[in-house]
Image 1: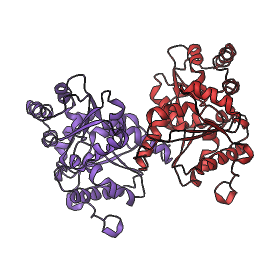
Image 2: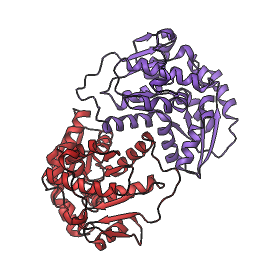
Image 3: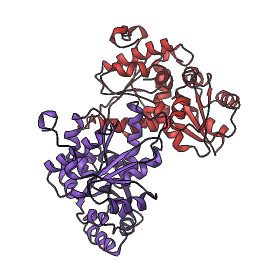
Image 4: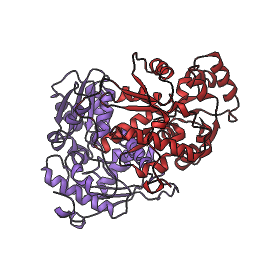
Length: 272
Length: 272
């Protein structure tokens, strides 16, 4: 799940690394962006998407959204009967492996930055690393409006990243799954000596390890011909971005109305 | 744990990737090699080593031994209260990622080959891959006798690997944690176009992912000054190989007698 199309960056890697596994994806475009919302609301929305996915009898849930991983995963994970994977720990591990000078930058939504999920996790493993986090609130809307290759996007990227205070950063974590769609513009602005960390690839490696660990791989190779993509917003815009990004055509995208999403579980069922 | 010094190839990568985590290692040199033993005996010995490690209140157990992973992990894992990680699934994932022509070779002990753990797991994920498995019973003894850089070792490697029937192998899994100590000789014999898979590095990546997944990382950075290395055999020979392989000096190695290992749990406690 994701707040919108950003989760497709994880799907792209998923399809490549795990061709024998099926997926169901839902993007909550009607209520994106999640980043500026209060934590409680992000938790409620994440619960609704999680319960929507559980209706399909899924064997694992992936929060392909940094904001949901930071703000909602810790309260939802203990309440589920299936493994729940987020995108932040894999990104943290990849960033620590990547940095050579110990200067890591993390860009994300306001919610992700506010949660301190990245800086806390990096410092827990590598206390000596210098971490700079910065919210980029204009990035998600420019991606969701399918302008991520436009001159407007280039200008927003330059203006935003120009404010990064640490000029020694050698590793920049794209701490929002929407940002890989802006990758060429971000790499161009940061220069060739900065390694960009897209947690998608690393997250799918973790998914693969957990499929083994919990012994839940799909062994009969019955991959559904039609991957299920849902959006709470406009299927047309979603379809355009999905087909462009995944390099596929005729992707079936279905609409699900926000009011038709399952209700948030009551506190006694597992959330505080 | 390992049947002997082979697990040190995992320890070496563990110390590099997870410098903030402590470890306790036991090598069952008095009863090595495990490879030719019957499955039930491998399960009993693995249980004893596992219970020995659990005495130290460990938060995770790693079978740094392919034979134990193949023959004993499936029966011991469900009975433990802490995560149990083996070396085969990580090696399988790495081999599938590595092969370009779909010809994978797996060398291991008789027990590992007999279990079909590698070929089954590779085919479950990639049915089209051609897998050749071969037991190399002379490799473990030559490593354990500290002759892994000798002309004898070179001769054994050449004679053994010369019998691999598939000449198109582009990826060879070192399906025994002892074999990385023979890596230069194996690479030299196979030639530069064959990628050798040492599951150690990949296993430690999985350990790191599970530390995050189960939220059990060591956050206070109190790494014990003295890593604990135990052997049921001679501490002197073990120490020589460990110091050479890990590039350390004055490693404290303690002896524990086989008769002082904990007993195998009764069937009702979890084994059949």
